[in-house]
Image (cartoon, rainbow, N blue to C red):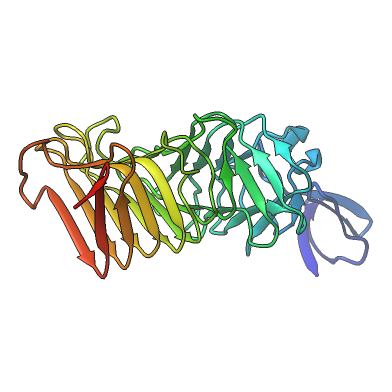
Length: 346
């Protein structure tokens, strides 16, 4: 290898004959014609948060993997992953003291999972935000079919804020330690997608706000079957928006919620779209478009939607009145809608 350098007013072209040493900090020392040169390059560019760019796996709880040894749950915008992907592992159950924020650059996915086939659980200390700066492959997966990493919401409602064209996937079980532990897809502008694949047991509410998409697939479920559990898609969530909130139930499992609210809001409230394909979803109350200005669409295809239980009811449109089909639509293909009002089925 040859380099050029200016020394004593003369341009010198010399062959590198001697040592080359690279440290973790990215400095290179060259000895050229007896002159020692130190060239510094930033390999790990993060100014805060996680400080590894390569594939890993890296242990989450190892302080050396974080800038200044501070474990803060942040993959900062100053960090650029070099791919082809990155894996960060947990070797023990861990209670996080911080939120999880993924904003790194580089068009590569990131996975958080257990370090072995022993299932571990992380207890969230805040919300999860996914707003990576790379391309559409810069998505985040928490959990793995083999190296299981479950997620506890503790006794709190957590926001999953996912930017447009990004996907957050939770593979294993989401649980809560109390009745208030739930999830809200709360990104309010250019929202993305959240995918749940686990047999989830959390008992708090599930809310899909305007523009967001929540998909339950595989054998995944929503909540723990508590009568207090609500699934709200658009509608009564705060804020006025024409962006549709979407819930896809593509699961072969079975889920029970107390209320299923689809676009059930007042004037100008966000519309809600629910697609149920395969599996069974049971609600004690189904409320669609309880204002003449709200919009909800329910599509059933090869699936079962039960509205049943003590005091169960279904409301479409303003109670006691009729709404136009453009405001409330039910499409059924190879499925059926069962409505049970106390001890009577119709």
